[in-house]
Image 1: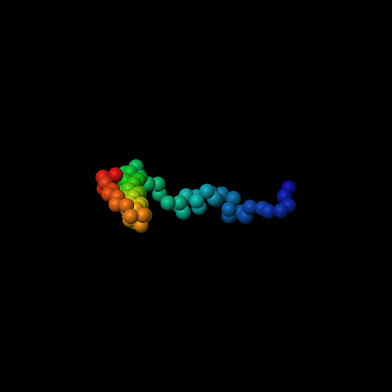
Image 2: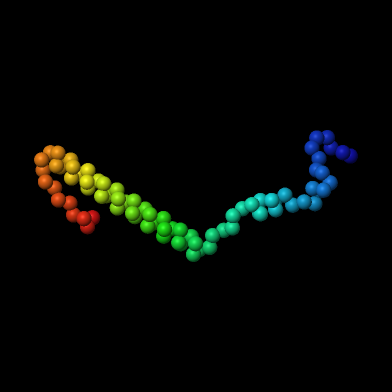
Length: 77
């Protein structure tokens, strides 16, 4: 008894449609690659944080100079 509507083609009856996804996905990273990526990201973040602190110190120095005060900031923060 034939069903009305969509039907599977004969050549696709034995096909594995999930295999299409397996061939297009990227391979998983090894734990060494993950560690290296995290370390690189942490270094980039640290540099960005240091640059932000430098900008904030410069802004504070300019604001203090505009008020006529002399402020010395420690670079060890």
